[in-house]
Amino acid sequence: MSKLIPGNHKHLTLDDRLYIENSLNSNIPLSHIARYLCKDPTTISKEILRHRKINTWNRGSFNNPYNFCIHRYHCKKKNACGKLIICDTKCRSCHKCNSVCSRFERERCDQIEHAPYVCNGCEKPRHLCTIQTKYDYNALIAQRIYEKLRTSSREGINLSKKDLHSIDQTVRPLIDKGQSPYIILTNHPELGISVKTLYNYIDQGVLLTRNIDLKRKTKFKPRKCHKQQIINRAVFEGRTYNDFKALELGPDDFVEMDTVLSARGSLKCILTIYFPDAELLVGRLLQRCSPGAVRMAVDQIQKSLGGYVEFALLMPRILVDRGREFGDPDALEYDKDKNPRTKIYYCDPMRSNQKGGIENVHTMLRMIIPKGTVFTDLTQWDVRKAVDHVNNAPRKNLGGMTPYEKALQLYGKSILEKLQLRYVAPDEVTLTPKLLKK
Image (cartoon, rainbow, N blue to C red; front, side, top):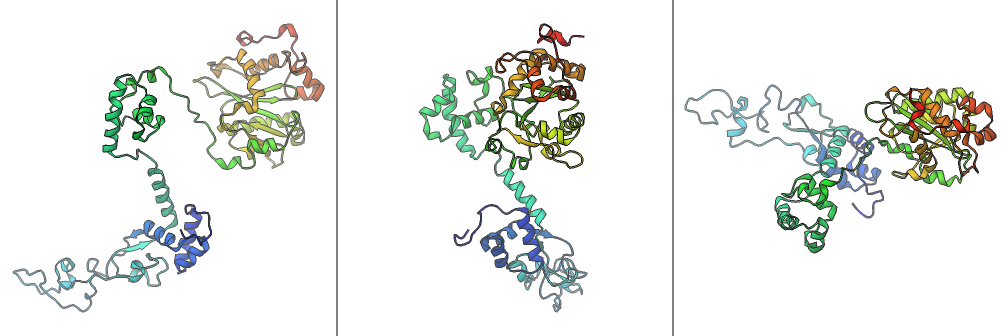
């Protein structure tokens, strides 16, 4: 791209391609299109040539779809194929004419062979065009081809079979001697790959060396992959943890929200809300761990509190992780009547310590509902009972007070009743699975 042309030097987007298609239909020159998109003219021409598609509709001349010679209208030649039996039919009406005639000269179109290289914007009606191969530029098809190429170009291994064989000839004998990939690559920097890359090659099976040949590889379990993260990155704009920290909030200006998942065998989960100023925990049982279920639970809490104003005063800001169940922040920030009730902020990936308060109180909840528990028979009554016993255990950070007592001072008894929280005597607090045994 020319250094004299401003722009972001990035790939063309779908909007850019739509503009190119509309401009071609309006017969706007490529130089004007390039100037509008802040691209070099060669970028536009290469884009059109690379992504134009063949239009096979109405090939050839009228009533003769196989003759593309420019002399076909006036040619009177016969028997060009040299058959022994001479026919009286003119060669221009025979399907062998273009392949056997010495005077054949293909019909050409300047609009296809030169800019703009496509039939978009051509003034000649399609049903009267006799060019054999027609080309059209379609923005949606071009975008689809571009995305497919972008994905496929990053797949696989960018090495030839010869290069892989050379690496294997060096690695395999040393692996048999008990050396690790790190030792091998430290002694052989000429291989030009990293330790991680070598492990990937072995794991993918492109080398004769296998995982079972490694000393410790088979002893480790595969790392867990977080497949339930939010896919739409646009929801993080203005809601990142840096945006949250820039507000410089106190512990009474926000709450933390998370989910406690069931073991395999149940789709249920527990939505937990943590108030840092009182270390208070609120729990709601969800039938599914989905954005819709979270929104429904928040709507129910708002209804029990009395309205969106009361909800906004109690929970003006909510800090959550990047789990898929929190992937619809607009549904949480606004109620069904589009009234603003809170503001959602997201922690950074793999940084559970940024909402450490709720993670710590989860350890107490897990004393009652251990990991590996299937929530099939769990009810909202069980969740409320477990949360009540957690909230009535004294905390060192509160000077020996319980979260329930602290919240009673800060919020009042009516708020705790609306949140379905109750008092439990000190000697009756149970933090073991026995609490929920039927």
